Length: 487
Image 1 (spheres, rainbow, N blue to C red):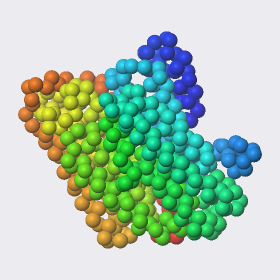
Image 2 (image 1 turned 120 degrees about the vertical axis):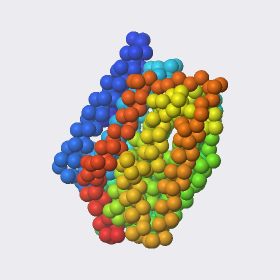
Image 3 (image 1 turned 60 degrees about the vertical axis):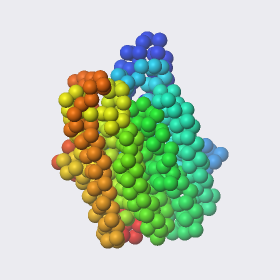
Image 4 (image 1 turned 180 degrees about the vertical axis):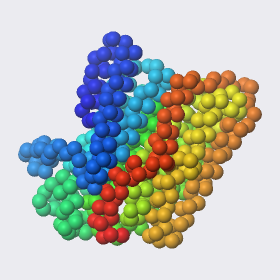
């Protein structure tokens, strides 16, 4: 799943001479193969019930012999398997979504898609902190070019802001990893070894505290947590719509994954004692994203701020430290990826068809763009966590998990209300109003509408059968709860 896309990227570049259609078809084929492997991994873990343990383990194999502890070490468990699967699903959908919206430098664009896919799956499957860091940094390269080359009018500014924020955050995170290596015995970067060491009291509290600060910056920039979020709206607005799907659907999940994998499993004492600080940042992030989204006129910028709101649920749920909260946080990451992917693709198609993303200008889509209007309504319902989609279940789980820790956290029930408010405002203005004659609007083709509808399928299936995901996630969550002291 890591190296097939990366090798495929090199082949895609070589196929450039054969024509754009060949490159597109090859990229789609590679992404479908990767999806097939990801489905096999997910189903295997679902059938064996091995979510609490690592499966499909490769290594540890010494990667840099002169530096002991730097190993090639891979595996998946109940935390990484859902994220690997949704990454593979979204890659296929991004390839489909790019057919109509990307028309320049085709071979480079599709090669970067495959590099991004391989790198992000490397992040979710690496069991060595240095190997994890290598893939973490590799993800930045294609995203920088996606924004800087295929982005909007302010693409250079947005790309530079993105790379500065994320690179600085990554550098500080690396210092924390090095601290774990040099101040623990035996010296290792392997996550399972460090987790066992922490469980046996082998990582002193002061060291956990310093590393937690470093990782908070690194993971907080990616999630993103207020006040490290300011790069995100600019990057989303300037990025092409398919790349915004990657950015919100996959890349932000790297931050949530890092908090759950490193902070909760390797830094359990600090994560338990100072959980209220992380929860406070999560709640502020939730309210900030929701309230600022209320005043946006650009539909794409509004959806970007919605991502900040929804990622606050991940921080809140994870550091609630109980089964409902942790499982709900992982479930929320999976659900959000599908729901937000649809909304970003819609924003791109609307801009392409109507020539604007301004909510005050878009009127009467139910008359002029009926297929688009239906998807806007369904996407908005998924984004606001309506009970007809599984986003409702994950948000409910996080809220219940938080309230069980402290009743004062019940204040977060206001956030879904605000979220519903701005989505309903958008639907009323863009769909239920009368059309403007000066806008020449063209509806989605049947193929595009069908492709976009695929984003909703996981949300419907998991509403009816949430155990398909929770059967994998819950064993992992129980093991984390036990490591945190059975909170």
